[in-house]
Image (cartoon, rainbow, N blue to C red; front, top):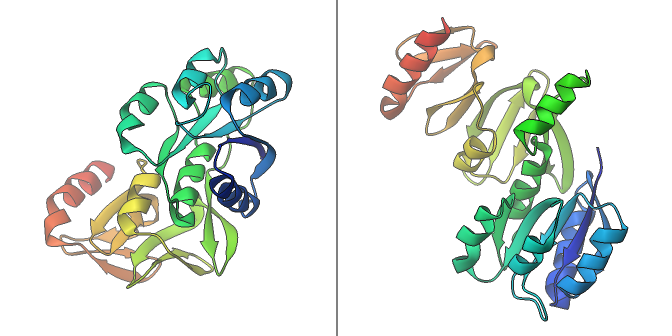
Length: 238
C-alpha cells in the first residue's frame, strides 16, 4: 500500500524536513509541496491525494479554514508550532497533531496511524465487497531502516534503557520508542501491558499465574500495579 501525500507548508526548512521524513517512509509517496492553502486546493481538486501534511499558520487561508473547504477530506496530519489549535484540529478529524520541531520518531508514530482504518464505514464497505482484510502491520525504524513488522508476529515488547525490543518468534528488533507510546499506538484487544517493562500479545500467552506469564518459553513478570487489571483481563480470556 502506497499513500500519495502532499505538504502544505510556507516555511522552506520545515517542508524540507517533512519531505526527508516522507522519503524515509516506504508506504508514503510525496507528490506535491504547496506554499499555501490556495495552491493546495488546486492540487487536491486535480490530483488524487491520500494524506495532507498541513501547517496551520499559512498566508491567504489558514490550514483550519482550508480543511473546512474540502468536500472529501483525505487523511490529515497537522504540523504546527502552536499547540493551542490542537482541539480545533481534532474536531476536524485530523489523524494527528505534530508540534514543531518534529522528531522523526514522533513523525513515525503519526504516520503509522495512517495504516489503521480511516472510518468504520471503510470496514463496512470492504466487507460488503468481500475485500480480504488487511493484515495489520507497522513500520519501525531499526538501524536507520524502516522495517515492516506484522502485529500477529509479535510475542512481546520489552522496554530497554534507551529503546524497546520488539520480539517475534524469529527475531528481536530494537527501535527508539517509549513503551507507553507503543501501548497507545498498538492499542487493541490483543496487546496487554503487564509490567512497566513489558507489553505482551495476549494470544501468545501459553500460561500465567498471579505473578508471571509465559510466552514462547520466556517467563515475564506481572507488575504489582498491573496485577488486578491483568488478572481480570486474562480471567476473561480463559
